[in-house]
Image 1 (cartoon, rainbow, N blue to C red):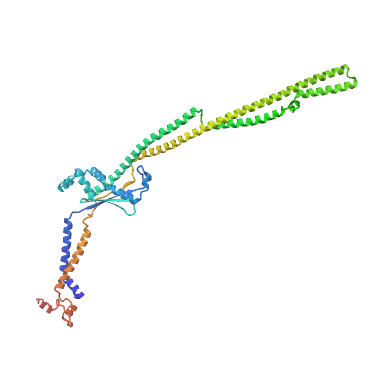
Image 2 (tube, rainbow, N blue to C red; image 1 turned 180 degrees about the horizontal axis):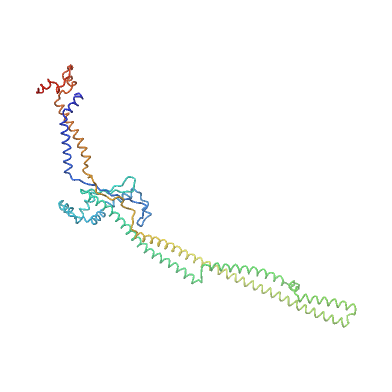
Length: 455
């Protein structure tokens, strides 16, 4: 069959094709009108991984976004959230749902359990592409009910997250409070041990060792000076102490030496003038003898003074050596005590650091336990959808129209194949192997009307 005959056949049977097309559309619309409609309402939740974390901020930061969203999606679809939705929306008092449960013959479980299962079966939680947003979709036959339950799931999830956050923070705060008491007790014990040790060893404060070191340094300097002075005095108080400069340089001895020299000069002059037995000569000799006696006496006195000074210097040297030895022994004892004190003070510092750290975490936990926030928040509220999600009326009408058109054309083709008619000159030539010598239109010519039964 030529394509021109086929197109002519389709044009000739257009009423059949149109009828099948209309019938298919009508059946589709009838089915759409009888099938139960379901509406899908959508709410969205945003998760901020940098938001406040309940208690363990360090561990929550290590979780990647995909794992975080998957975990939160499982929580939203949990029985706990569904039960909170049932309570908040008072679904147990809904007579329509109660009648549906009774008609279904669900005697094995409770009404609440049936509601929980049914709600979760109609709930769908999907992450948006390349975002930290979860889409909460709920399917129901009533658009208002679908929007209400979708919003309730989102709100109750956020509420439960907040409760979990605050409850966890309170538990950690309680634990840190106990830990703070323990650390405070250790700190007080360490401070008491330092105080008791200082009191028992006579240590007033940490500067005692420095003061004792300064005292040892001063005594050592005095000892060095005393040793030098004693050595010098011992050298002066040697075997010829009478000829030492300290003895000869005294004012009394120098005065007596001058007087003796003058007296000797006078005796020499008198001896040359008068002779040895002259009264003046005898008087001068007696005076010189007195001066020499005084000089010897003063020299002996000065020598004894030098020896006494040397002895005193040696005694002072010995005393200073004893004091230095005692101070060194005290320094050694204080050094040992100071080491013990420093060790105890290190224990105090360690306990203080631990106490400060625990106190800081305790304050943080107390703050978080009273902080009404979470890292999840509802971004979009679900609104009642205008068009049902199922059945998809535009799609079904399009499919029905396409199917009706294909079915009508296919029916026309089958009928034409089973009972072919000559509709074009090409078809006539194929059927008779005769050449076409002319064409006329039966619809407009008189022979055509006569053959058709008309005038």
